[in-house]
Length: 258
Ligand SMILES: [Zn+2]
Image (cartoon, rainbow, N blue to C red; front, side, top):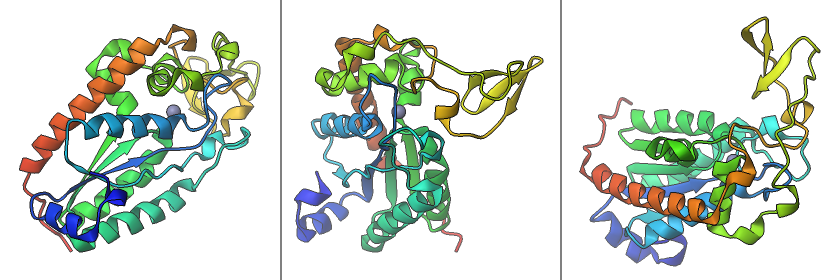
């Protein structure tokens, strides 16, 4: 059931049987030259579409923007920052809380959103509500280790293929990961803001365009992705989510502390 498609009356009826609402949260950001900027929003959107076939849960409109300061500077990337996302999520959940929603399920598409989601989740827990944060790409990698992947790698590429294969730019799908040792020649860039110095990891917070030539990062090369992988992964995750939501219904609410 889509919050945007039903009347107040229907929401009131829904609240007599459930206090659960799903809120997808995404991001608009570079994912390599082969992937659309909306990757982190498009995939959660598709998962909730599949979820709707299995579950009558209330689904709020997707928040398309996220906190992605680390990827700023790559053309087209938009960030709300953690503070902006905390504000939006707080306003959305406060509004829904007022009417009786007490079980908030975030379907998250982007790792940079986690600080904001967890901040809001803590606030809600103190008020006697649950917030469950589902990071689809991490959980999919737990449900099937073969799916585990990085940023714009094969896992996310397969996810976008599962949404619509025509969204991929196949001219660039074979590009190798292109990490640049931008800090110093003897400090090898190893990951998100990290370098290796004499066998130990040092973090230099900086925007990704400084150390990535094309914007994708991970062990899973994008060209390994297939449409079948993407379709199976998104359906499996939607099925998992439907099962989780059934279990969530059984949970007692936490005790309010304020
Ligand atoms: Zn992503």
